Structure formats: structure tokens, C-alpha cells
Length: 380
Image (cartoon, rainbow, N blue to C red; front, side, top):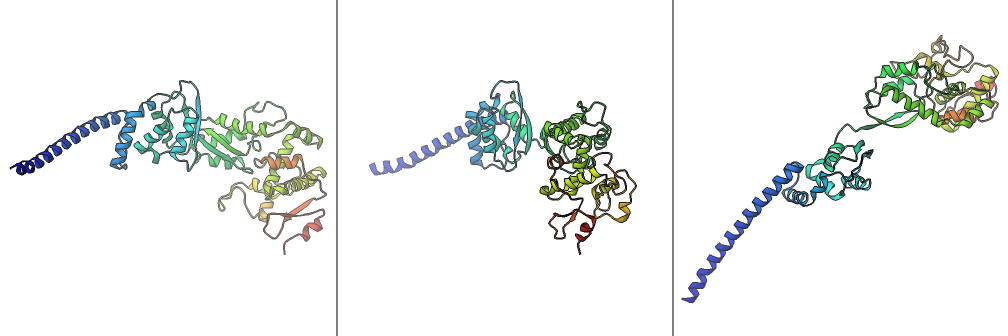
């Protein structure tokens, strides 16, 4: 009889255990539901791509530690631009934000990005972040596909029209035609220093990489380019040019020609010596680049720099055509880089008056003192 009682007790205990387990699961479920509802109402829904286990994990992390996301890391008034580079992980981004005191906790910020699926949406670029923004606002900022700053490049040797052509795809809201109007007809007093000409800004738009506020205005934008030019220009260079009998305007015109004629930067000082030698003795400069500038846009080649030039091109009646007119063109023919300007300031001493491209495709040139030597350097 005793054995029978023990046998019956086992199923009863099993049933009680199952009932207790079910009650625990129900309690846990309703407890998690409340946690999930609170997290969702505060931080938004979890990303659908997360597994159930990961949703549980990040939900409880936000529930227990997420309050630091709701307040600014430090109560300040300043604003900073934060750069996100291609290939950076959200962990690296969170770490750098914490380093700059823009967020309070890098780990929970990263967890929030993953929880919302923002780790897949982070953009590259420069983002304007106020110190009064909390982590949730910063997260929304860095997934915005229109960063507050953009990178804008001006290549050495570009003419103003080429800079204008790059504006529509730059992310800046600057009208290309208005840009050209300002460059070609700057207001009086654009340059305060009397050594700067004012008729045109062609030649004085410094080449280089710029980080630009997306909302920058036209005048600010052009001022940024000319300010960079003035920053690059050293006072001793002006003295050196004066010793050569050159004004700054003459030097920049010559530098713009050197920029377009040279292929290899190391040759710039020697090419500069050729044009300076010609200019100083009153020879025509005979520069293909000035003819290219005079011709303008070549629709067939989709280029502002026609190549090769024809005999008809060399007869173009323009003051920029240095095959027809002696002296310097009226303005620079492009915006030269620092190396081309330095080549005019510090030219290599030579007795050369001619140069032409070598026949080996290297981009280097053969130089000659006389026209006969120059003819002998012609490719077979």
C-alpha cells in the first residue's frame, strides 16, 4: 500500500512543478512586456533585424542603463563639428564622441544604435553637434544623409568655370552663374591690400581641400577661397618678386601659365625660367595654355582645355593668345597651386627660351637655348 502512495505522489509533484513554471513564465512575460513597452515608448522600437535574444538583451540594457542617453553629457553652450570617416565602426564613433564629452557613455550609446538599427544608417561627413544635445538627438544627427559640412576641392590649374561646374554636385546651395559673376566682376575693395588687383578673382582662388558649412553664402564661399590664397602668400615672396621687377599680378599670370604647361611639378622652376626669360626680353610667350583659355569650352572633348590644338586654334584673335600678342594675357588663365607660384618666385636659373615635350610619354620636357635646337628636339 505504501508503494502505491509514493507512485501516485510523483505525478502530482510533476504537475505542480509545471504549473509553477507556467506561472513563472507568465509573470516573466508580463514583466518583460512592461519593460519592453517602457523602453519602446522612451527609445523607440527595436530593429526588426535583431534576433529575439538580441532584442531581449538590448531592451534590458536600455531599461537598466539608458537614462544617461536622455540628458546632455555636459551642460555647455558651444557647438562643434564632428567628423565621421568612411569605414568607422559604431564602436569607434561612440568612443570618439565620449572622448569629446559629447555623450556620457560610449557602450550604452553603441547599444542604442544597434537596438534601433542605426548602426546600419550612420553617414560619413561633418555633423554640427550642440553640446546641449542628448545622445538620442546626436544619434538622429549622425544618420542624417545631409551632413552639416561638406568637403569641397579646388584643383590646381582649374579655371573659374571648372570650379563653378563642380558646385551643383558639391552639396552646396551656391548658384554657378552667380559664382562666375562675382569672380569675374568682384566689388571694389574685395582685396584691402593695394598689391592685389580687383578686376577679376581668376588666379586668386586658392587650390586645395575645404571643409565648408553646407549653408555657406556666395560671398562667404568666394571670400574663403581668396582668404586661403592670401594666407598661402608669404610676405618675403612679395619682396622676392619685387627684386625681379614683377608685380604680384604679373607673377600670378605667369604662375597660371606654368601650372597649365607643366606636367611634372619638379620641372616647374625650369619651365618658369623659360617664360621669365621670354618675358624679360620682350619675346612672345607662345604658350598653348593661353590659347586653350582663349578658345574656352570644347563641347566635343567635354573639356575647357582643348588638346591637341590646331593651326586654326593658334590663329584665334584674342588678347589671351600669346602666339599672336606679346606680353602677358589680361588675367591669369587658371588658379595656380602653391608649387607653380613658388616656381615664379624662385625660378631655376637658365638660358633656355624654348621647351617641348619629350617623346617618351614621361611628361618631361626637352629644353633649348635656340630655336634651331628647339626644332631638333621635335619627335620623329
